[in-house]
Image 1 (cartoon, helix red, strand yellow):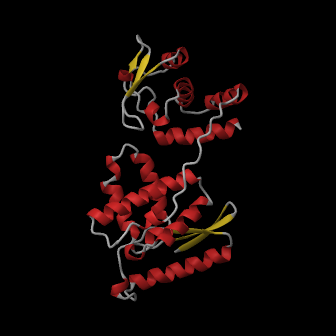
Image 2 (cartoon, rainbow, N blue to C red):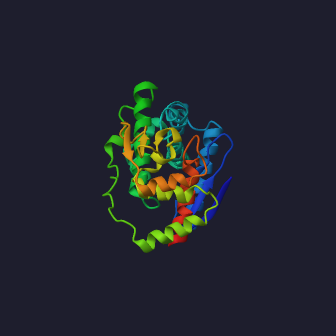
Image 3 (cartoon, rainbow, N blue to C red):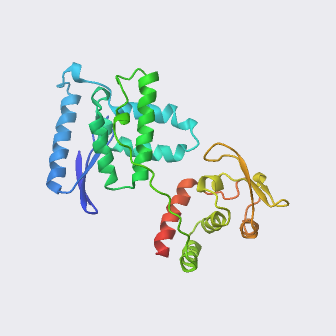
Length: 271
């Protein structure tokens, strides 16, 4: 069953069929979306009723992505974020391409489509996951791939880091907006990040056992480069900790996804 709906300036077509993951694609014109949906439905019908020659059949990329999500992703510290990116890949029509027919040009088209809706850094992270998935599948799962097609395309760079600090007016607007969040830990997380310069993931993993108030330090056990480090705590950081309602377990008991959503709402309110 196909559905067509308006999403911003584009038309999104989605085809759902029992036994298949949803297939979604966006178009500038409704007519193009309707045509693609009809063609996709016909292709699925031909496959389901065995009209396609057996020699043409090959497991789709989605098979590799599902296995990667089940076997590889749980081993990673960034499991939650990676599951979200894998979901994006699985919902795109690239996931329906047979592994034996997955080409660099197909992945380049995926890259270009995604660059129209998300940032280059987001696309880069998705392609890094896809590249590793295909590498594992090629070397360890006997996938029918002579080479990794992601290696032959240009992956977007992370871009230059920005070094702009908030003005006092912007900071006050941000904190005022954070006060309106239903989750009481959003504002303290923002204040603690500003006081320490710690990354979001480091802050959310911080436990009270990592805090040494006597020596005014915090131990970061899991860092981006893998090396634990101890940082000094300023008066501002200690003041945030003093106001925290918890004293055991995690200092800021809020999930990464909840914080991400609250942060987006807070930024929108502050603007």
